[in-house]
Image (cartoon, rainbow, N blue to C red; front, side):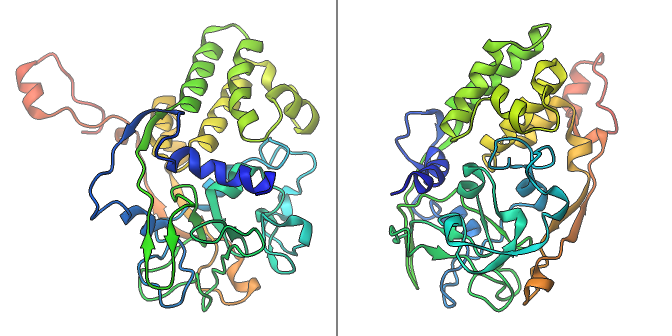
Amino acid sequence: MSEATRQICQVSQIVADKWNPEHIWGMCRDDPTTDNCFDYDVLPRFHYDHVLSGGFVAPTMKAVEYFYSKNGVPINEDIYYDYDTRFDITNTLPEESPYVQPYVTTAKLHLNREPRFYGSVGFDKGWWYGLGRYNENDQWPINAKNGEISGPKGTYIFSMTGFFIKKRSNFHAVYNQTTYIDKPFDFPVIRLADLYLLYAEALNETKDTPDNEVYEYVDLVRERAGLKGVVESWSNYSKISDKYRSKEGMRAIIQQERGIELAFEEQRFWDLRRWGLAPQEFNGYVRGWYFLGETDAEFYKVSNYHNIKYSTYDIFWPIPKSELRVNHNLIQNLGW
């Protein structure tokens, strides 16, 4: 296995490896009738006749754009990343494998991204390593346009955004034309990188300005992800080269690092609520590729789907009436 493929597989195995020592507190899955249900929901279909998988639990375009460039900074900050043309179609080259299939056309958005992007997200003309295929030259190809194997089938067996969650599947599972045999694992409720980033966040909020102690714990997570440290990355590659020097700038860096490192692990909902960012982040359209498109020009067109409404009253849930009757000093949360 090449170093690039190891970095990609590591992302999912941190979550899906049953005996991963980084798991601090896990949620056990012991029911054989439900163990692989979520796997079915996120996996693309790799055979036309395979009806168990479909990838209908899918990442949004917003989540996909959130991952860093290959230089370890946000794609809208990277001085070498052509952000304005990220949705344009381009031809792929052999040297871009194992990240994408060679000699095909795909969106620029899929190229020149960090390893965690390729380990977390499946996309049209990308690869899916494992599931019985352990040769880097013979991985599962993801072909997600309408009419292709991983594209829409029926009324619900498809990804509405054109993306797939790669991170929640153990690459040691077995997939063939009629069967999927999963590798059960204890889903991490708390893991080591989560604690490192929480500690870095607490340090940043309690210090007047961020220092090496704050950077250290973020850099531990970044190093394992195959990226340079915060100071080096922002100094060399970001349009905001001194972003890490201020409390506000470092807060934004830590928040994005958590969003990437813990992507699709059921953490972001709670993070955004406690940061007070939920209304601005959750409101708006769910965006994705046009999943009914059959050609590059049709498919790689950013489309709006559900319009999410998230109000201030959604941040704090209602206090039960039974509690209000017991304590008359309690005031019901806003909007309820």
